Image 1 (cartoon, rainbow, N blue to C red):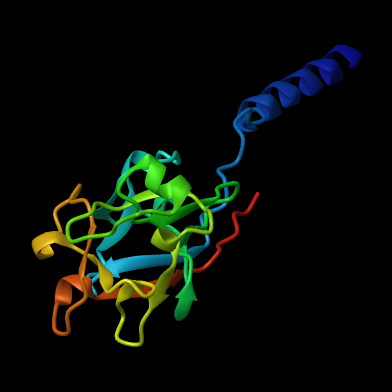
Image 2: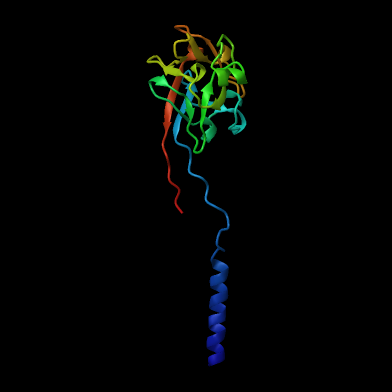
Length: 185
C-alpha cells in the first residue's frame, strides 16, 4: 500500500511539473514611452524620428513610420519652449545649429535647408522653438520653421528648417499624446 501511495505521489508530481511552465528568466519589457508624437501635415502614419534611435549629439532627425518607440516621443507645448525627447534618462533637444561649435557657442546662423539633429539641451537660440496656433514649430524670433523637404514622407527623409510661409503645408505638424499603458505581470 505504501508503495502504491508513493507511486501515485510521484506520478502526480511528474504531471504537475510537466504542465507548469518553468519560471521566466527574461525581464519584462520596458514601459512604453510617454510624450507626444509629431506628424507631418496630419499624416498619423508618419512621425518625427531620431535616426536609428541613436540618442547622441548630432544624430539626424527624420521622418519614419510611426512605431511607438522612444525615438518618436517628444515633449513640447503651445507657445515658446524646447522640443525635447521625452525618453527616460535623455536630455536631448531638437537643434537647428549648423555645426558642433554653433551648438556650444550659440552662433547657429540658421538658414534655409539646415538639417535637424538632436543635441544636449542647452540655452541657445537654435533650441528655442515656438509651437504656433496653426501647428507650425518655429525657431523663436528667427523666421524659420521645422520643414519636411518637398513634402516627402518617405522613411529616412531628414527634416530641415525653412523660412516660415503661410500655406506651406510642409511646415504643419500635428500631435498625438502618447498614453502610458501598463503591462500585466
